[in-house]
Image 1 (tube, rainbow, N blue to C red):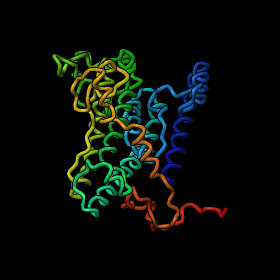
Image 2: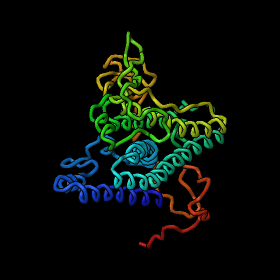
Image 3: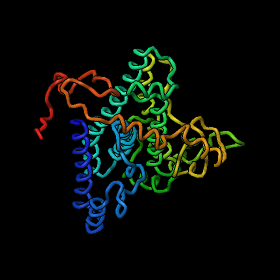
Image 4: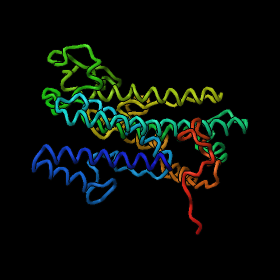
Length: 339
């Protein structure tokens, strides 16, 4: 709960930081856009957020942890790019915000790690070695690994859409104007102009995939998205290390870049998490294999019961390895008033 409060406070501060820049430096247009930023609300029917991933419901802690792991990582990638801006007020603001995004991603990665660890602990204690026996694992009061994989598929694919179209004239114009760079531009060893450079994007070919080269300036979004995937895989690797150490035979993976996409070059394709192209009918028929359905969501929410005893934890999450500010597990962070 403390982490949730801190994430919300810092995300609100990020909003106000952008509003300040718009108000101070961009005249009437900036004031109008700042008003629009403040008017939009996640999930609102009248004024929803502009990007779809920010309108998704977050009804349970697993959803929150995956949101902070994936979607805040998109924030990291975008802020890293904007931190290279030649517009100094924007660059300085983004550099400060990056320190807070790091905490948000830590909350997500460590939260999922604790969920995965608890599931494996419960399976080991029950002498269960088949993680695909979903109902048997759920009966232990934990979230089964295949359902966690479905949630990973959902949040990862939703976050990929935040990068926009793989090929973008706008991103090229921003780069040429010096308003935005690439991820960690200062570490890249090229001319930083990209006039003759190319970048490869996977595209469907003869029922499979091939890499098509495009001008690197137009493919900046695709490159940033690939950097995001590389960064995500580091955290997923740590989740899988936790699973391996428990002795359970299972591996969490990121789905193919074309899976469940709503924007860009893949939006009209129907790809499995492995990248196999299938018909729309087959994809809809097998959707429940790859993405959480109402039954999965209902089960996860059924576990979301408050544990109010100091030093105790819910059945579906392991104790934290390092506690907040190194306080003991029964430290009374929140004092509950008597009814």
